[in-house]
Length: 181
Image (cartoon, rainbow, N blue to C red; front, side, top):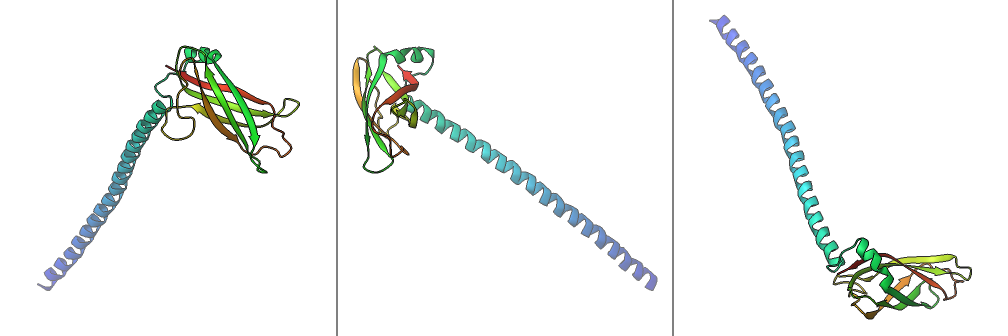
């Protein structure tokens, strides 16, 4: 009987080892599966966030163009848009305030107008520049109205980091993007 009892104890120890191995395997499975589940959840959340950001950007981009469209037809329309700009130094700061009028001599509405302003020295060399929106459809910011057909509107902008020796003078305006409707 004593032998049988030892065998039972040894069998129990063997059984305990198997159970411990199974538990360890299950724990590893859950840990690794948990990592996989968590990673999958993170990837899903990231895709969802990217879709939401894309939706918001599409809405913002639609709003910024004010319902107008870019493209070859809009680029050809640039000939109907002209600008008068006045530059004025802001005190002793390295900033220059630009004020002006943009005119639309055509029959289409300019809903978006992105312009590059270049401040030129007496030799015609650019010393400072800024790109700004002169017309857009967003509800915030300056210049947030279209330029109607056969009309004009005022605009403001500012150029930073202008050299102290620059005297208000020549400003070159280049239309970088335009949208019309």
